[in-house]
Amino acid sequence: MSKEVYTGILGEIQEEYNKQYPNCFNPENMGDCFGHNLPDYKYIDFTGDDGYGENCHLIFMWKGKYYKMTGFSHKSHYGTDWYGSSDSVREVTPKTVERVVYE
Image 1 (tube, helix red, strand yellow):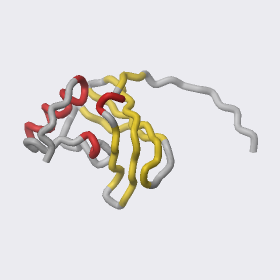
Image 2: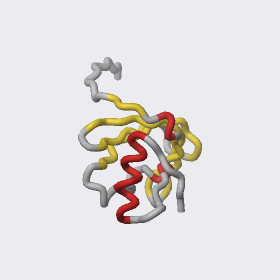
Image 3: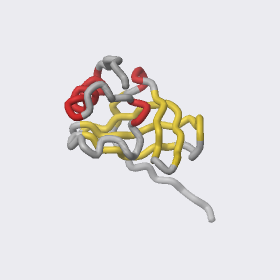
Image 4: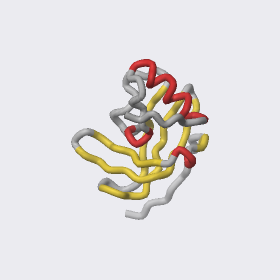
């Protein structure tokens, strides 16, 4: 159980999460199985390799805005566990990028 108090976006998510699960919020669990009871949270994607200790970026939406958190991930049959830093969360905007691929 986490009793650490977060600030910023993670603080807002923690406040909502704790209404349902008091003192259980942990940003390390913000992978694809997190937030199914939070209507304002949506897991978008993560970039990086599957496995343990891989450098990745977690992308999620909170109240209609996109955010990126840098850290490490670990995938298992439970989903993606996220080991990110609360200091690394920043707002981002989706962009379309054209890529040329030669096959």
